Image (cartoon, rainbow, N blue to C red; front, top):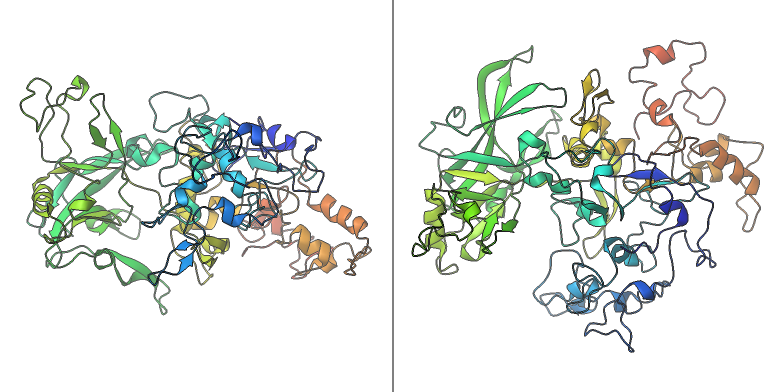
Length: 636
């Protein structure tokens, strides 16, 4: 695995682990990049010809010239590197740049930006030696793309920190395995869900071919989407398919076989949840609601919005639908189950993936069954015969996620059939199959949404309002989005998804800070990629740049050395003061947004603050930087 574009300080952080997704470490070397003579951000090299299959005219070539000029690094070679640039995109024949990662058009050339069909340098036919090297070939900022090595984004931070800035970063270069995740399966205990022995790379967090989530976050992190709920994942097995005639309405709980799923949480407490797959036809009197959420302007609560996801998917009156639903009990004032409740639609997308057996038969992660099973004794029965004896007696996939050409429609927690025989010649067979199934296995994808503020012309998210994940006063706040990102992180950092006040953990028991609420989502305290003194904040939320240049109240800091905005002015003394103030003194800066334990003080001036405010020294002062400033912040 190539480690190009990786600074010495980044490599030597290997054994210092921190939080948020897999592994994060502080730097431990004063070495510098020999190729960094031009002042390029630490970690970026200008050439790596010996480690990849960049196109050249002497001994490496391919029709698309994949990799051509990727090492130029001056921003002039976008059209050479991105193979979907200047190509027909509009319905009027106009040219544009098609997306590289997902939403592929029928004349796409996007694949060639990363892959070489016959001359790949690594597994997956990548043109560079490994996923990290392939991703950072473009995402180092030198081609104008999202720059993971740069000054840092509000949501992800930066991989481009320095030893002097006490950097820490996720080691997404294949140096460690998923099992190295703090709070994860560090001992690689067998028999638990997850892909813990895999190398950790960019592709463990991001899905390069498209995603249900913003920032291309992976729909199946650590394989947890296809791991049973009982083992810490999201997959459901043996869920009963219930017709509208089997239950009088959606307020009658189904108590038959397969509906209940029992699991133990991190405290060892047993929980039981009830799921069904409800089969109905669009237009039925008893029909689930599956809509978007909008905030009621009066009550400020989230309610069903105007977008009906069945209609949006193209389903019409009479079309049959399989909708995953979960029983939500009605609780009394003491939080006890009253015995009443209702089924609500689960909007997690069904994961489309499959495994091959030795006879090259596909076995889908999400599939529905009518009770028919495989056998390997009668080859003449082509419907049930499977030569792989390991599958003898296993259920046959009657309906699965690979029937789009037959009229199958996949949506938010449902599978439907568009009954249009003129467009889909085998739709009657699919419809009959859907009407015959009695149980299903459902692998469910993770979905993470940010409050996007700017998208570019190719629908790539440029900036996000990350505070909308936890700040309920933010107009873009949507209840549950903060928990969703914490749950996504916990696919690897399993034990860190917790409530405070009691010992919790799957792999190790300890008392932990709350992370399973919007208010305390993981990214309120941590960056995803990495951190550095230049992007950390103090408890008032001010960054290095704020304090250095006197922005947002930063002029009140170090008034004896004011910032001189004159071009060419020497601000080195103020720079040193600000850096010394914000540098994280811990051996590992732990991907934190705030320096030192200002990550705590920023909130605990108001939250659980009885033990900290009852002193003569506490005085709220809205002006940061002065001696009486002991107030921190709560709203960033």
